[in-house]
Image: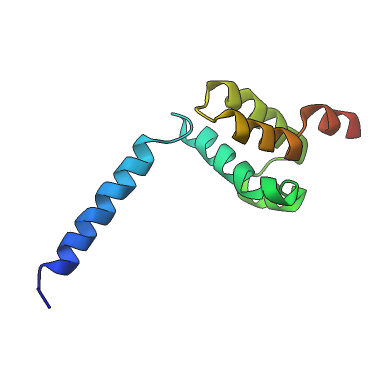
Length: 97
């Protein structure tokens, strides 16, 4: 085994992480986290209020409001936006309270 292989692997991984950071959905880190979290939970009908509270320290209603504030500035494609809209509809959240 070549002794340089682990170093090359680490360098490739570092470059990949830099590329991932560069190709984010939003320039703001908090907004990026919101979108990624919401997208991860969208296939399951959205995150629970408990998960949102633990991860972001806000209510479900505030999370959904904030998510839809940052979506217009994001680089999400239409399919992602449709998925988020079905899991986190703003009108349904506001009618609950």
